[in-house]
Length: 245
Image 1 (cartoon, one colour):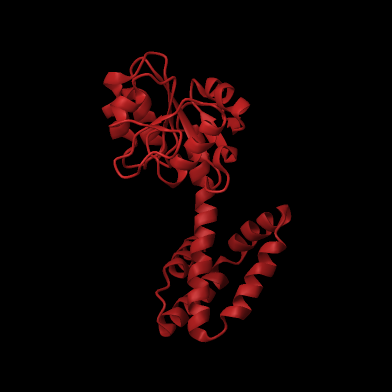
Image 2 (image 1 turned 45 degrees about the vertical axis):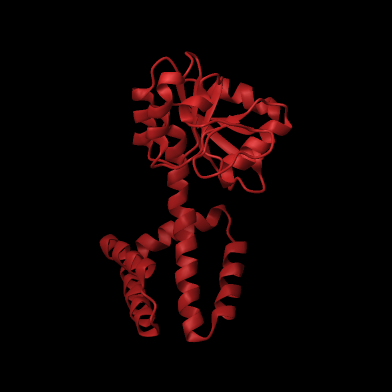
């Protein structure tokens, strides 16, 4: 286990609880109980059948580079970092004698551990699933090369993280306007009513009424500015709507 922070540490503990021999390395975090602390990446992977790289997108490639001299042929290198598909492909290109799988974690690890839904792609995706599923992991194999799984997660992130950003911005403005409780309840009611038809209504309505909605978002951006809230999400929505007119 490379990376023993919030996600890596919880995954490691669950693996230990299932009787797995886990060795870990993290320059900033001590290994949790039951995990053998190794001095660095290469030392951690030297006798591993499966490596879980759970550090950061920035560290994904360096972790592999540091580990390559010690990796045993046939080892599965599982990259669980939320990195671009191009980074996952670079890992495959750099790997020699090992197989890289792209693991997209589709929910927060804290509170879920190994039960965190994982979407996995790459040539060894089925082997990865065969190793972890019997231990309680929730693994779905996504056909395609490494990068196919994370590509789907990132597409979903446009919605989830974009929605979260819009809610944060709207509530900040509502707080400044003195009606945060009202808006919170309104947002909650709207989200509770979402179904498959809502998506069609949102898409069709956005294209059909783009000009009017662009004017509406222009006014909304001006209001947020007057309230002292920078309209980042609001302005982006306005600009998209303008392009659709």
